[in-house]
Length: 309
Image (tube, rainbow, N blue to C red):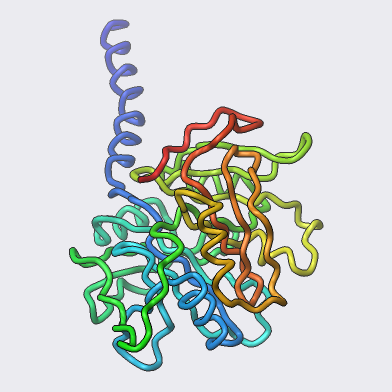
């Protein structure tokens, strides 16, 4: 009798583990950042910043009412859309790429993650759905068509288009107040993996969470609720563009005209050991340039982020 009870107890003990493993295997790959969308109060100035200054070609649009979209690569883009009245946070949303949007929808439902509406399809075949994280950041899961983004709008024959300053979005970041809730969503449900954390002095300020099936990452910009002051959101809610040589990129940009009223900083080495250069669009959203790998040992914690190619 004791032997039978032991076998039954062992079988019961195995079931939760098996279900957990099955649940994890249900999640389709999340391969990287597909898009960063920002708000703009002056679309002409923003077009000059992203198109002329940073050199990203504008993607052909199916309608005149669609937001502007600039091609970083065949799999990544930056979207610029009109800012709603009274907006103070100009990072609209981050889109993460998946290889199977239908499976992603089923997985999110199984994990009780609220989905806004149904899967939508764009004229070029791009499919996406909307969710929000526990702190209300708007996120998109996106599946590109096999050929990637549509070809960019043809440049005028009389004017040579500028060279893009980068060909990859390395990471995007936003303000986080409750790390435990964000970890449950991004780490436990979505499978993101911590790659590095650091901060100035003895304070933890940044946590880099790598996508589970790629080389890009999401950066928690940790902040206590009472710390936020005017102007913080544009610096903390940001994205980073990868460059092989920060000094060469800085030299290229210095030869391009840009509004001198916008902050322009010199290259510096961050606490993660990488060369970086902070730029700001017309609404103060930080567009950080960053070299691919550290040039010196990062501070604060073990560093396990891969070097994208």
